[in-house]
Length: 334
Image (cartoon, rainbow, N blue to C red; front, side, top):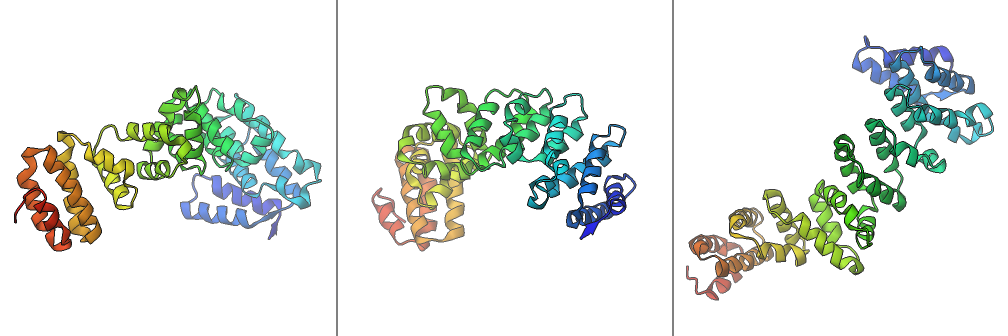
């Protein structure tokens, strides 16, 4: 529905007003998003944004409304010079380091990654003195599905020293559809070690997804993939052991099984405990067989675990007939 300036102003005040209840604010936001804004109202919203005398919450609400509608992408309004000029005016606010940081952040989100990429504003934004603006710029950058976006994000985070930027964006970086492809491509370069720490930290934000993606990577990345997997699972805690067991169950037993077989005496107890729990919970013939083979490898390596392993194999027998035959290969009698 089309609405005039008075209705929009009332809704904006409801959104930005401190005395309004949360329910009233959400209702006003929903109504603003349903409106069809006429050019005069759009221009008026931009005037609110640029008016430094207006309250910051009101200016942010106006920016969020513009950002939701993005009228400059409306083909009907494309030839209206007033509307066509809005992204450039918003960009000036984002680039103005003297402007209020909340207004700059809202203006950045309102413009969107398409325009920021088109105008090649990323280098300037990612070198801005305000860490929160750099953080939000990276979030907006990673909305772009292009693989070059990931490369830019990795390269920036490899030199970014502000923890609030790095820690906030690493997870989003790892969720990008081209992250692992680009990350491995960077690691095989001569300057690959420069990006190693950032890539490892990003992988650690979603360890299971990272391990799955790396094991599915192209064979041309085999060496760097193995090095990265070894770095991710260099030390074993409960989470990493559970991840390795899950990968083994899923049939991705290459690296996972090699790492599980190589556990040291400090970690083997946790591996056996998680194995026992998963065998009893799943009661699967195939998984019990795989678990028995792994635990018998520990029988050969750790004499102190013989009694524990013998007891567990006896408990696992009902789930898989092969357990008895496997046990007999080590002269284990029940």
